[in-house]
Length: 92
Image 1 (cartoon, one colour):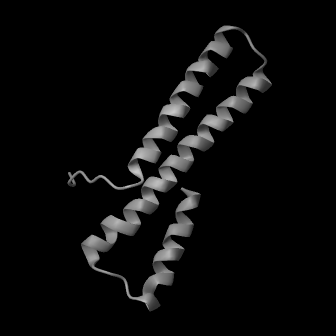
Image 2 (cartoon, rainbow, N blue to C red):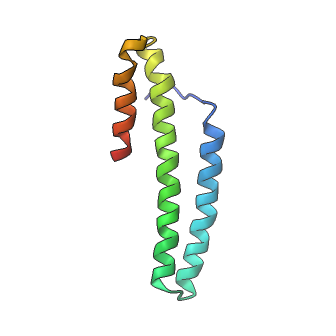
């Protein structure tokens, strides 16, 4: 298991996830109140997007900080490979 690390983005990630958590509770209430499936699906999409954005931020933060700590600073000419790697993570 790897060592726990806290980065400057973590408070923002927690904020996003707490917002998504509250939103998810509202969606559960919507289902229990027999709200429109379209309304529920739209709200679920919003929660899913928020969670995906939090995941992307966490992964990019890890690439920027933890990866470079492990392999050392990436020279400017090699930076495009790291940037491309970060870009492809949006397809996760």
